[in-house]
Image (cartoon, rainbow, N blue to C red; front, side):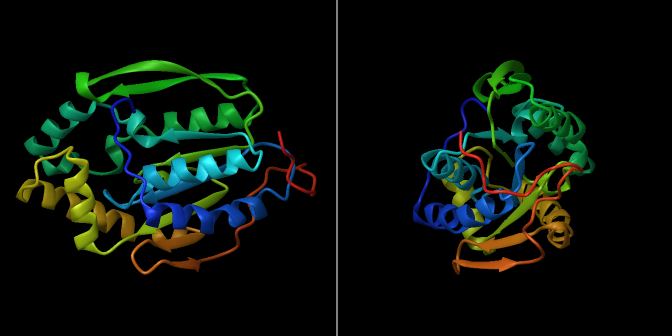
Length: 233
């Protein structure tokens, strides 16, 4: 999303450092790019952790691309916010075109060197398109609230933080008015995300700096991939 403001702090760098070995473990198979999802509530630090993780993987020689769920809402951000104020029934997974997001990821995994995807221009409240250079990509990081639901995900990461820290992070970001309506929206989001925890492979608490391995890290592989060391670009 054009206009997104990232504030990468020590906690995001710590989380990315913890996640790099897990991504490398999942990359012990050669073949299609590994899809890593970074999910969590608003203010959890998804974008910051995703881009810091990508930076570290690139530094180790792994071609990495980040895709943001924010580009796949059916409506641009300010319009979507107005619709939420009309009815809270608008809030939830149905706001996001997850099918289109997964299609973009599958296109990259299928080997397309260039992929056209939506791009939100936040300040102009509009959705346009951009072309991504996906040639040689080995890791696709998809960050966003509901990305744990993506069928193509190989490693699902869930970020967790105490409520007061989520509030502080949202205030620092300054996207929405901090009022009762926003609290109602976030309460709905919280209930939805709580139900996604059982789908995650790894839960990362940025406050206590703890990592919980919820199940196997090994990527869910398509048939025919060969075991081996991660291939560097």
